[in-house]
View 1 (cartoon, rainbow, N blue to C red):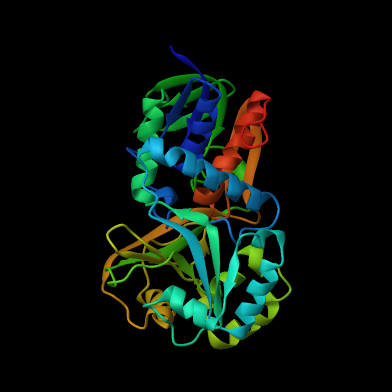
View 2: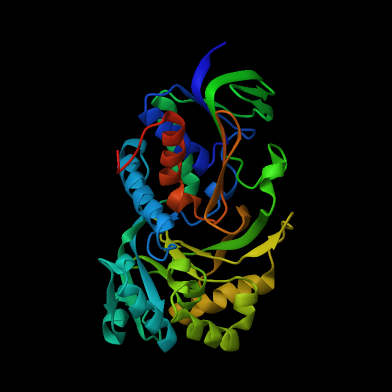
Length: 374
């Protein structure tokens, strides 16, 4: 029986990030997944690697490092980068106040403010009727998740990482996985279960629930976006903005003007694909087992915010829901057994931060430093 240096349970972006970090150490690595390919949150999101607005400190640093890793592997792995940067449109004066405060922090470095006229020109031909200005960030990049995650897996396989799909893990002990395809032996084990909170080490998932989101794809509006777009509602969800004192006044105004949007956890992200279509979302509803149904009322609220920017709404060509593990804090990294790590990103930021988190976890297992500090 072949023995590995690392066995990873889960072929989503968190699991693949650990496989990448291990492979860069030269470790013999195997990835085990119960499905035929990644099918969860990793392929049901925007593919937007978000730096600006992430929580100050460790999470922001992880996002910056993860963005750099995406940029490093995209070419070799054949992953297209469809957009770079972020444009955050301030529709209200209170939103502009939050963004000015953000620009005064270390996280605002290299970002810039556009006044009304400059923002309208930047967004042309969208030209929203009412806006205070916009923050423009150069830091972000966007991939198409449903293409990028499989491409990353194929590239890792070509680099020598073994994959066992359609294989469920029934038990874990130090140095060994018990799977439906027989035992797998490895010096180290990383479990990246996504939002499966019940199969492996469920006792470690206390306080973790699941978040359901709704997303849409709209037909090509006939224009190209300058970057992925966000609006005021994002400023009270992303902690890099929401933790600023100025965010309190914005939240109060949003509670008066858009209470239904806040109640459904809606904020607007609009990303454009290579074919011109727009990925639009999203909402947030929490439950131990979220229902699989998309709400027309929630969709209407998302598109209401969209219409404030675009004026018109192109036809909906695709709808889907996604779920991810959710709890306070960015992530949980636990050691339930010797040489075993359980890693769950609980903030919905796996695409944005998993590469750096994986370098930390694998580096800890190896007793070395991986990444920028190496």
